[in-house]
Length: 327
Ligand code: NDP
Image (cartoon, rainbow, N blue to C red; front, side):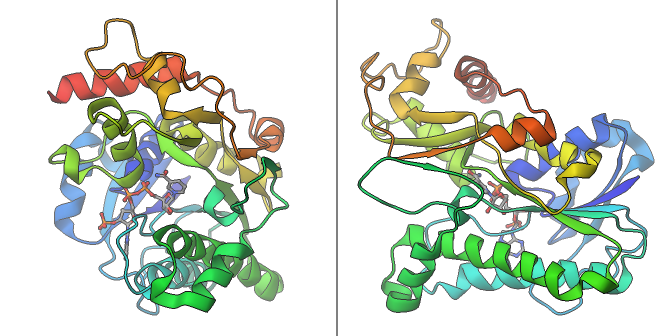
């Protein structure tokens, strides 16, 4: 089958494209300009006609994906801004929500062969910030961030703005399916990852140009003092496999699925690096007793998608190898 991947030049998406191709799918990668498709065309040249680029200049425009969805069997919608620089929350909300609803609307009208749409949401749409430790599941929704942005607008925290964009975009996807159930021949499966780390294969000109999550890890390894705190994580390669399994497994339809390997302190990553690593070592062991306020259940991902999560050592080794190869 053929799969449309939106935001195909992004950190996660390039791994999704690669994994789809490895699993025998053909891929149509949507990017904002022909220039942004060049690296992909080179990277996936060995797959010949099984990989093609489509240019969708502005995902917020009505009907933006009308042509792109024609003839595909499935869609992986990953395009959405992930950064903490927005002043006006609309900078994040507009592309997140309109991009999601727009691609679903195009699929409803012109995606006559589409069977499934996988939407890349986030644990940002699940979590609530609290001072006591929590174990969250797919039943949880981040209404807290949405409320903060409603109340404070531009004065809301950078985190709340991003999290609101993910929460409202995911809600919009589920609402769309509910509203149009009788008229669509496809269903939706949602992936909810926390911080995504591991090797980079998209086009990155310098460490400053790294996407938000890969840059956080790079900084932990290279900037003294950047290794305080932590979160929950997933290796980008495992997340890409989850996106492919979400197409391959019938049971993934209609499901919201958290994709995580567990919690970390940044120090744990420094400790997990190969002994030969020339990067920062921090204070070995200092992350072990950290209290993780947020944890997520991942049973559903194992049951439905059959995921086997990589270890921190595996991910750290791959990330370090990547830094070394880039100099
Ligand atoms: P990247 O920044 O590497 O990729 C984002 C992709 O979305 C790029 O293709 C980018 O296109 C596109 N995009 C961003 N803003 C817009 C916009 N306004 N209009 C059209 N396209 C846009 O980030 P990731 O790969 O990390 O993120 C991919 C998805 O994963 C996002 O939905 C993100 O929310 C989600 N996610 C990421 C996590 C992480 O830790 N990385 C964690 C949880 C979820 P362009 O290059 O042209 O800007």
